[in-house]
Amino acid sequence: MIRRISITVWGNKSKEDWINWYNDIKELSVDMGYSISHLGIISETYDTGKVVTVKRKEKSILSLFLNGEIPSSLSCYSLPDGFKIAAFDYDFLAVRNCDFISIILKEFDYNEINEKRIIDVIDKYIIPQNGEVYSTDSTEVPLIYATQKCNEGLESYRFIKNLNETL
Image (cartoon, rainbow, N blue to C red; front, top):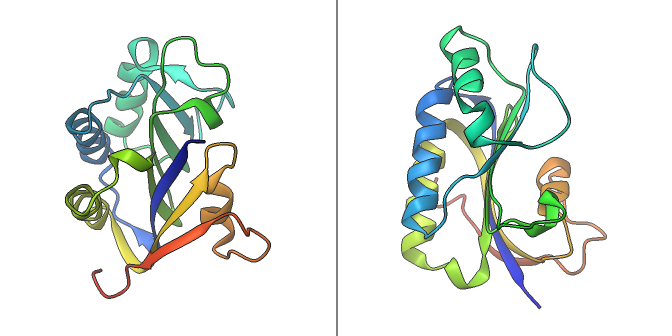
């Protein structure tokens, strides 16, 4: 069974630099052996409810940012060929919205060096209130936890550590 590690930092106000965040996430994913293949965006003018390929939509999404539009949420996925459901089949996922930034990777990609690098990237784009590292089964959706900011009733979510001392 594949487990995933989520590094999530919650904050009140995110810093508004979305283009550099996207570029940092692309670089981070490549450093871990993946590439961002799909995007999910919710914004004032763009919300299909579906993930789209980077190849088809990256330019139009980046132009939204250049024109000053601030998305409600941007998700960057590295999906394998032949994936069935983006919410479960990703190799690497980074999500940013106004409440939190969460980066989710496979358990075997998690180590202290990658954790520090991920936290350094996250810290550039959110004013942190608190943060956690937690583990989930690949059949679970860790973003439910990130959205709810609590772990009651989520027994299979394994708490790894509190990041408040390092933020």
